[in-house]
Amino acid sequence: MAAKTNRSNRTALVLLCLVLGLSWEAEARQIRYSVPEELEKGSFVGNISKDLGLEPRELAERGVRIVSRGRTQLFALNPRSGSLVTSGRIDREELCAQSAQCLVNFNILVEDRVKLFGIEIEVTDINDNAPKFQAENVDVKINENVAPGMRFPLLEAVDPDVGVNSLQSYQLSSNKHFSLAVQSHAYGVKYPELVLEHALDREEEAVHHLVLTAMDGGNPLLSGTVLISVTVFDANDNAPVFTLPEYHVSVLESLPVGTQLLTVTATDRDEGANGEVTYSFRKSPDTQLLKFQLNKNTGEIKLSANLDYEETDFYELEIQAEDGGAYLAMAKVLITVEDVNDNSPEVAITSLFSPLMENSPLGTVIALLNVHDPDSGQNGQVTCSISETLPFKLEKSIDGYYRLVTHRTLDREQVSSYNITVMATDGGNPPLLMETHFTLQVADINDNPPTFSHISYFTYILENNPRGASIFSVTAHDPDSLENAQVIYSLAEDTFQEAPLSSYISINSDTGVLYALRSFDYEQFRDLQIQVIATDSGDPPLSSNVSLSIFVLDQNDNTPEILYPALPTDGSTGMELAPRSA
Image (cartoon, rainbow, N blue to C red; front, side, top):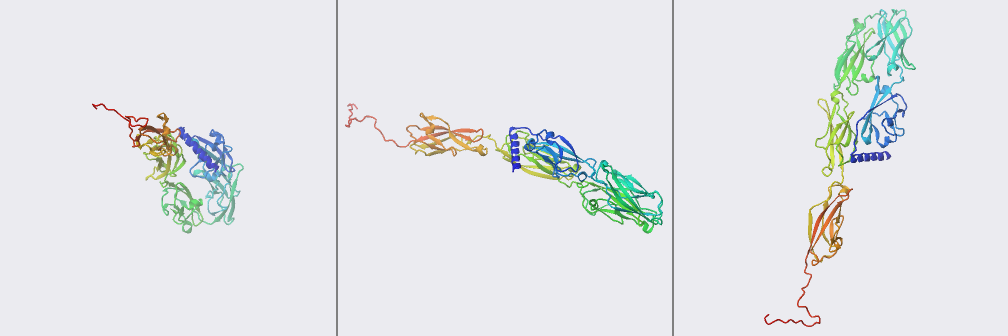
């Protein structure tokens, strides 16, 4: 609950920055650290708060967090110490295999400033793996008529460490018939070979037992051993020979299962069973062998499982040819997987700032988006766009990030919300498209005063009306929302016949209905002019006014009165003399 509250507070702070028109940043600089593998969880990596120019307590206050594209996060932020620490044990060999340099890249977002920092951490190797052979025993079969100098390939050791911690040398146990030679092939792999120094005599010794030791260069030095049993056979004086030492083939990752990739061929000049060659995989990880099928009689290699360029783009297979007399030959098959456009772009909304004040300045950041396509080359090049009718535009940032910013002035009274569709298109042929939808709410400001439906009003009322009678009503409309649209009605202060106007008329502040506070008399006044004011509840409030004319209509409420001649005050009959000429 506390984390949710803090997040809400940060969102409120972001909204306040937008209202005040503060600038936003989404630029980054690279911060680099180095850490050895196999450290305990929570081990110190770097003082990230110092490198970001922040105090440790500000990591939580400013919404500092790690952002990445769905991968397992190897590092975490310690908000108490301000340090970047490990999230668990890191195995460099599992993470980067035998790459010379193991780099982990991710971004840190300072959310209240929408500022990204690129983080690059080099995981250094320790000598935590000894060289290891894939078998405990190796059988070598040699005919007794083999001439000295003949070489027999042995099983090489594997050390997943790198640099001086990797496999450095081999050593063969002391004996009088064999010596050891080491060949360095492509990619720096060292292959041991057993060299026959002195002729063999099966009748003298049918089996020779040797020990091959593989050593790395770490401190302390680590080693592994394999037992070699050399069985001496009678006459088979020709070994199989491959037509090529290495076979190269490039294939599309979309090839269907069962497709023939290539055929390896080895020949043996011997006759009969000694010249019959069979093929087998000599040494490859099980995950690779599951992808391919080898015909032991023809040397034909077919695809047995779907390929995925994004999973593995290169395979190295070792093929062994063996004749009937137990002679062996070895060749490599190097398979390069070529990418096809089989992945649609992915769009992730890293941050969304909604609602947005309608008076936000141009260039205000609305959302931070991350775009990624796991394909390679042109197939992985992604462009983003939105509808040109929207008052927004996309600005490219770093590392696949885009900022969505305001491009034209907003007016909530015209459009109160926007349904935004971000279209991400890759550069493949044909291109693949992914759409992401989200809604942006526009927050209201008090930028519209109430308006009356007429520029002026008038009404008629018969005199002698009852007190408190409803005589008229006015209505004003405010296009703003919530309290900015709540209208309060009032009358302008004025006097009439030396009395406050409020003693004649009152108005309901909520409904705009006007009431007569006294009975009107046509013989005293025939019309009444007032100003009605409509005020909204915004901060600051806006208002407008309109004039209202009230006309009083006469009723027959007075009897005739004789003004001349005047009646005598003593009660006698009145008398008037008229001249003769009248």
